[in-house]
Length: 124
Image (cartoon, rainbow, N blue to C red; front, side, top):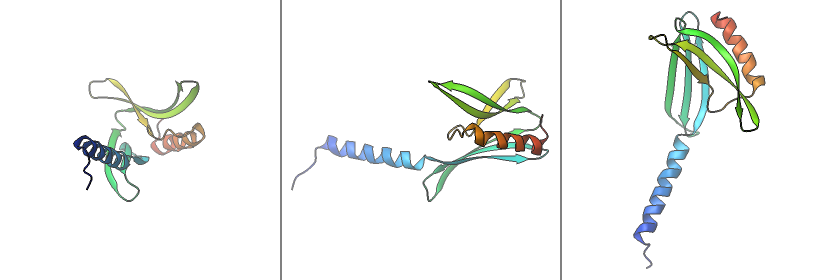
């Protein structure tokens, strides 16, 4: 019987673990939940197509929220649009939380979402 070199076994194990990690931390979907009179919650769901392994939630209260904006950024030779919440922390420091930062939908998708959020939350 032929035995594999110990380094080959280690490489196979490391490769298998890397593959599983990549499959289990893949972004399944991202969402924005607007709660009138309370604020906005941003969610990122990660996992496999069968199970959600982790959910990252960030809540921005209406008291902290200054505005929801649609901005553009240059990425190489491309222009990418992104939606963000502009808010202030307790120390009055201005922060920016990017929505859909992993999937980065196109402008045609972001604009109606931003419009509806502004109407729903009464943020001008």
